[in-house]
Length: 343
Image (cartoon, rainbow, N blue to C red; front, side):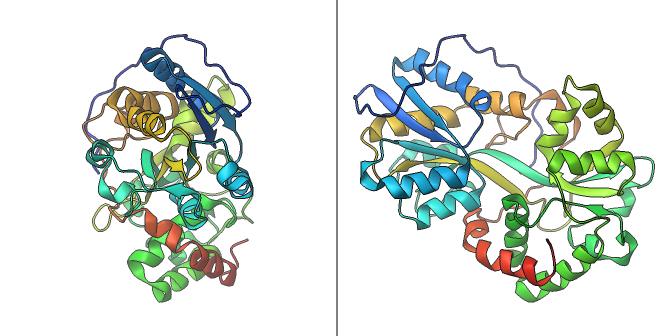
């Protein structure tokens, strides 16, 4: 996926979103379990309510906790839609049998095939890229090339990354298993882990700060964290972001690893038609532009405008691996990371 489009601004209304306990099954209401922070979804739900008149009931929480809740509630669950981040978690929901197939020609037209499940149980709604950030004063872009090259001796003691328990890292390794096979992936993991500057700790912003402060020279992070730091009102975050640059790995072969946030309709859904309407709305251009502007994530389609920050990073080639493979290989990735000593 190459990003070429200019920036755009979406001005959303201030209509009130009513957030209530999820007990209703009225035909004009839709109930959402969302792993996205309220601030990253509420304005879009307000717009949906404004356009359709449908009431949206929202419950937010951690992705794994929401899945556990769905499983325990079973067919008695009031949730119509599960909205979460990372294909690995969406695949877990699919395997847990809490989602149903969506029969929507419109969604199949809007969402590229590699960004949704093969049986249409869930659909990607935004794209996040896992990239390399590097210290401008210590590393040249010409020194960087691929994820695989991060295992080279050149980077001994120079890499920061968060822990192996983080699903973004698990999905990165799962994607490598899918494209490179287990033997090559295990060899890469051994060299990569051997190049860590410190034991993994903190989130992606912490890795960027560590590069900026000189604890390491490069880090592997999701690009939207850097975007958030660039636009932050916190001067310390702005300063750290100004000391690093972004590099798109694997541009001469399979492309940069990407993942998604996405949604599916629960098997227990009482309002399937309205749930589908909501997911279509979230995949439409206006919502896609807002994702790009508000959270520095990429739209699921190339023709949708992106923010000025995303545009400043230039176009890139994204891996077209079906993101279902990230979930399918998750367990194998975790075991391989454990064997390599990635804490």
